[in-house]
Length: 196
Image (tube, rainbow, N blue to C red; front, side, top):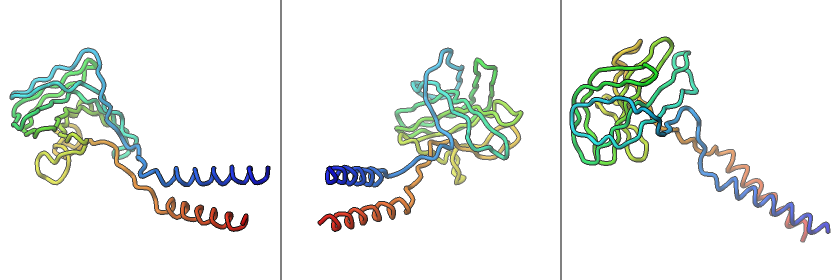
């Protein structure tokens, strides 16, 4: 009976080590994009050729305050272009909640890229429009070549400042996990010698 109990503990320990070594990364929940349909799609006016086949959706609030204040954002519409081309002209975003914005952007979409018009709210400022282009893997694109993702904010307290929204950053597994795993494997070896 004692040997069976020891073998059970040993199997549980080996399983725990194997599972911990199998984890390659963890995610830090800073903010995320969740695409979902909602009734009453917003009005989107863009001069140019595009396929508006990407559904409307929401952008969750940021968990980390921006300059001490929380922000919220709404993904107004996604523009999907399946062939390389340039979209130039005015945009008009309007939401059922009353938030709206107008302005203009000029950008190009490569195959597999999507453009997202985002209206976000920060402090008392509402309807701050931002255009972001993302690749099929969710990574952001430097639209205007200034070294930052996204485009400049056209209004609000930081007009002229670039801002970009992207998916969750992947956090690597700390070295301590690997050290702990190798230490546990060493303990299994010592316990095995003790039985023999």
